[in-house]
Image (cartoon, rainbow, N blue to C red; front, side):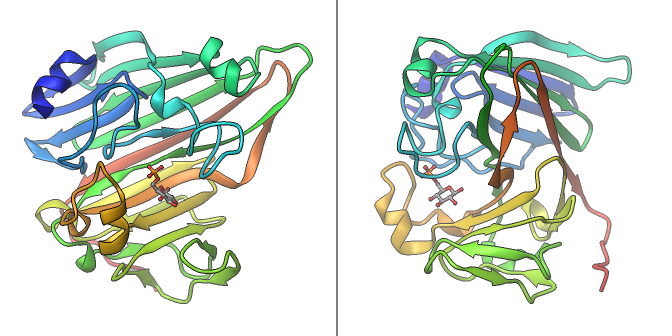
Length: 290
Ligand code: BG6
C-alpha cells in the first residue's frame, strides 16, 4: 500500500542513468530516495505516512522555520508538511548531472502560523555519487525582518548504527536533549551511537564523514552556512512511541542533520540567505586525521 500511496502523491525523479536516481516528494520537498548504482542511501520507515498531512518519516525532510517544538505551530516547522512547487523540472546538464528546483513561498496556511512573507528555492543536483542541495531564502518584505531555523533532516540508511562512526565533532559543544538541556563538550575523535541519542552539536566543521553506511561504504557530508549538526537515533523506547516508525528499525538509520539551530538566522527586509550541503558516497579507505 505504501507504493500505491506514493504513486498517488506527487513525486519527481532525477535520473542520471546507471540506476542512479533521486526521488523527491512534493510534500515537504522531501527527498525520499537516493540511489547510487541501484543502492539506496536513505532510510525511510516502512510505517512512514504519505497521506500529505504528516511529515514523511525518513529521507530528507526540510525543517523550516523552526527546529524542535514550536509554540506557534507544528514541531520542526511547516515546510516539511507543506506542498512545494516544482519550479524547474529535472533537466540534464552538459556534464550529465541532473538538476531540479523546488520552491515554497508564504501562503494562507503558512501565514496563519507565521505571518511573514518569504520565498525559498531548493535546488538539487544529482551527480554520479553525490547529491547537492542549494537553498536560498529571500525576504521580500519592505519593513519586516524575520528569524528562522533551517535544517536538512537527513536519515542515512545503515546496516547497523552501532558500527557507524561520525567524524568532525571532537571539541564541539553540544546540547544533549536526552538529558538536562545543559551544554557538554565532545571528547571523542569519532562519535558512535549505542543508545538513544539526540544532540545538537554547535559550530561544527564543514565536513563530517560517516563510516559503515550501506555496503560498508562511507558518506561525506559537506555543508556551507549550516553551523550546527544534529545527531539523532530514537533507539528502542522512543521508537515505540512513534506511530510511523517500526520498533525494530532503529538499527538501520542514523540522522546526521546539518542546520542553523542554536542561533536563528535573522533575515532583514529585501535580503537573502544561502546554505548548501553535499552528500557524497565513497568507497576508498578514508584515514581519519588525528
Ligand atoms: C530530531 C530532533 O532532529 O528530530 C529530535 O533532535 C526529534 O528531538 C527528531 O525527536 C524527530 O522529530 P519528529 O518531529 O520528526 O518526530
